[in-house]
Length: 129
Image 1 (cartoon, one colour):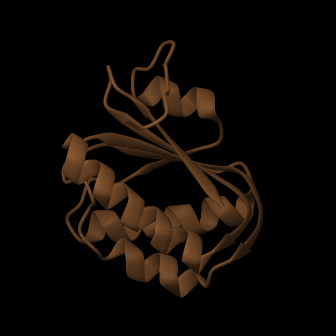
Image 2: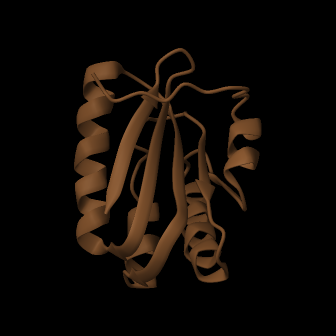
């Protein structure tokens, strides 16, 4: 399961994943993000996995997804991974993105670090219009 919000003044899509993370969640997220980017234009992103309890996605899928072009080319992304197993798969994805010529997502341990990396002082994430 995931939720989406957008910080319009800084152009940051915020995605929070919760509970059980499945391959279907990732496919639905990708479809939703593509739609938002098509409508709103290029944007940076935060993918927050801090509330994920169980990962039901094979590591090989994360690597496969990492070999695809960025959804929003040239834009920074930050993954929040508070658990070692999430950090491991996020880092594997990030390495694939880098190796395939994309901007490598940064993997951090807290939402505060993600905000800092993207220069967000007091972000105002809102429902997507």
